[in-house]
Amino acid sequence: MVSIFCIVAALLYADQNLMAPNLTAIAQDFGFNDDERDKYLGGYIAAAFYMVGAPAALLFGYLSDTVNRRNLLFYAVILGEGPCILTYFVTKYWQLLVLRLMTGISLGGTLPLVFSLLGDMFDEKKRASVAALVQVATGVGLAVGQGTAGFVGPPLGWQWPFVIVAVPAVLAATLMMFTTEEPPRGVTEAAVKKQLKETHDYVYSERITWAKVGKLIRIPTNVLLILQGVFGCLPWGMLLTFMNDYLAQNKGLSVGTATLIMLVFGLGGAAGVIGGGLIGQHLYNHVSKFSMSVFIGVTTAIATLPLLFLINADVQSMVPLAFVSALLAGFLGSTVGPNMRAMMLNVNEPETRGVALALQTMLDDLGKGLGPALVAAIITNVGRTVAFNISALGWIPCGALLFGTAYTISKDEDAMQGRLKMSISRHMNSRVSLGNDDDDGYDDIDMDDEAALEAMPLYSSNHQEKNGFSDYHSEEKNDGDTFTLQ
Image 1: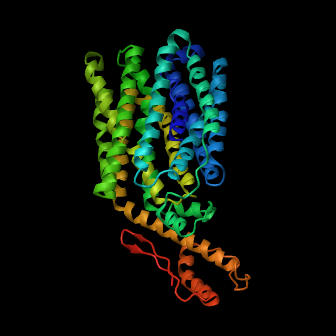
Image 2: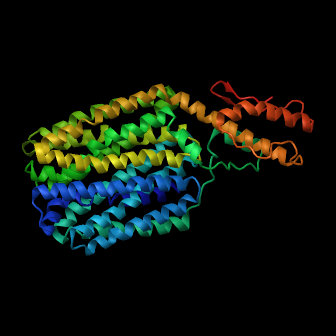
Image 3: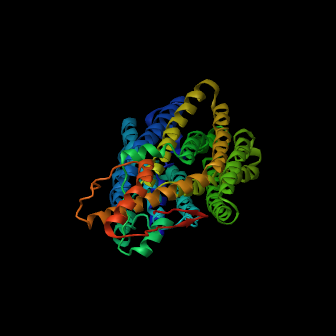
């Protein structure tokens, strides 16, 4: 199932950067000058694309915790790729704006769905590695889409790449519907696996509630990982929206050479995702949990250096170095993705992961949408080069926030396992109560985690005495911690 999910994600992300290699050609079709090109195509459309993706991420994230996620992913593809195909018929600017806005729905809903599915297919010792596969698939898709636009757009017209990448996405989503199944929730968690050994018919049935959504933003690791996206999206928004055109129009490179440099950046990103995921998972499993945080924090911050070289150097006279810089920037800047999403899967319960990932995606998309718009506004006053330098520096606070998760990750993971144990205990106690005439006054239990923790010993004792249980214990060891009901 991982393969088909990766293929669908790759084809969806091929849509994301289809305009970048042909911004000038699109501007000419609409009669825009250079300033209008950056403002209307690089700024407004990019903002619309990501701004609609933000609420879509939250909506699909919430739905992913309540309905069949595989079916929901299929609907997201159809809802977004139809408008992408219709881009072929665009003749006016407003039409392109509306269609790109609608296509953003697919990207907004994809990652929360896919990673929620993977969280119920793999445990914490494999999640960073698997997340790397998904992210490298999206990176390859983005690079292939941009490459297709760069090489097909000039001879055939800038509209054709939209059709070329959208049709396979719809076909892949249809294949997914016939070849995959929805994985059961929670079965990869230690507490749930232990309960399944003791009670074979146990089903993890917790669902998302608004109270649980509110608790997500009180988990320190969630807060740090979500906030880093606000800063990290600045360099990414600049790279994905403007960099290809900047190298061609401002640095004197041909469109083909500029596209190749960005393809090398994408290859570096793919290597960074795979290598970063493997290294991060190894550090997590064999060194310490916080070493993963240190690794991605440092690599993200120093990715600023090769990116600044690419922006400021005379790349026309040193093309080989430009390729090396693009490779390094792509590698160093891409280690965060799989490790960050593995962290979010590890500190959130199965029923809240979709929303947690959606919150991160939402702020990331908001930043990516606002980022190009802000850069476009700065360009008007100080020019492209200064605006791009400011954007590149966004990786420094991003790295600092990632580094900060070294102080929170272990405690938040332990707290999540504790909440799972409480949920399982409430469920098992309710099963006992159903077999005792429902006359003990505990028919309906609706309490938060803290209240449940205080009430469980009394509640369990009540059932033990009523049913002749003299010594009921439920223990689970997790890194030396024991959870006991007596």
